[in-house]
Image (cartoon, rainbow, N blue to C red; front, side, top):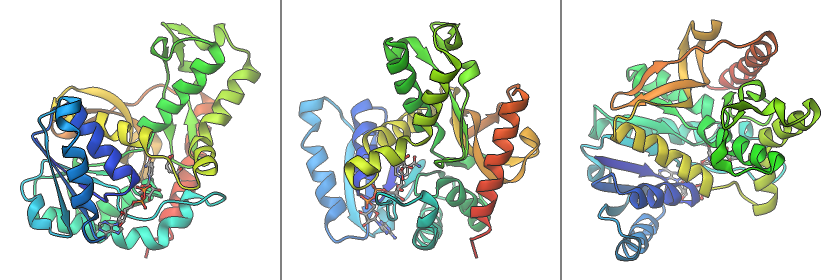
Length: 307
Ligand SMILES: NC(=O)c1ccc[n+]([C@@H]2O[C@H](COP(=O)([O-])OP(=O)(O)OC[C@H]3O[C@@H](n4cnc5c(N)ncnc54)[C@H](O)[C@@H]3O)[C@@H](O)[C@H]2O)c1
Ligand SMILES: O=C(O)C[C@H](O)C(=O)O
């Protein structure tokens, strides 16, 4: 499997590192516009290969898309991150132009490519990629829910004082501070609903902390996070590479599912060699449905800013 990562910044480099460490890809190409930056990141990462025990070849390039030819999967991380106090939605002005141009360049070299969109505001950037490229809907995937769910599990484990490996849970909805929908009712600790252990108030706090997970880290770091985003992307790429049919919440183009149309938003999907192999419609209760609809309204409002 050949993977291209566009953007050699914090998230792009982290994606490339985790993909290489998991050792399922033959080649990772990192592309950036900053002269020499991707080449430097690729060389530095290649010098970890004998230490970390992987055989993936990592190549860097400054803007030469011919190096990406024949990629099976591309990850778009190019664009600006937010600073403390900003929302993801404020990034649309600069990032929309970048994501549109990058996706066109990728497809010109690799017509069969599967694209994973990471740049923010991610749901709107995923929608833009659908609208501007016309690729089949299974081949454009937005990464947000996998990260938000990892943060949800972190917060649940903290509240439960339990190991994270004992905890399961999922976040659907838009990848935004307000739009995320952590499914607290369905979250479990080793198959037992977490509501058996945590009060409604405590679970409400877990959900609130999960929703501002990205903003909290941006406040601490001065720029947005990269380790968990990179790890989340690597899991999606791995599921495609290994055709594993695992379920992740991803931003997918909806055409009636969940009663929603003409937007990309986080819902559970089955990932395999064809990208999104199935959108899974789970039974939501009234409150969860209402939150998802409100989240979709927020995403559509941001989509309306695309020109
Ligand atoms: N979806 C998610 O869950 C998630 C998680 C973390 C970050 N993000 C988003 O990912 C994006 C990248 O974040 P980061 O922290 O890596 O930023 P960063 O500034 O560290 O890196 C961005 C890189 O993109 C490059 N770039 C800009 N224009 C380009 C172009 N036209 N072609 C190729 N490269 C280009 C820049 O030179 C830079 O190296 C941001 O928009 C951020 O909000 C999304
Ligand atoms: O918070 C951000 O702006 C980056 C990313 O979407 C995240 O959730 O870490």
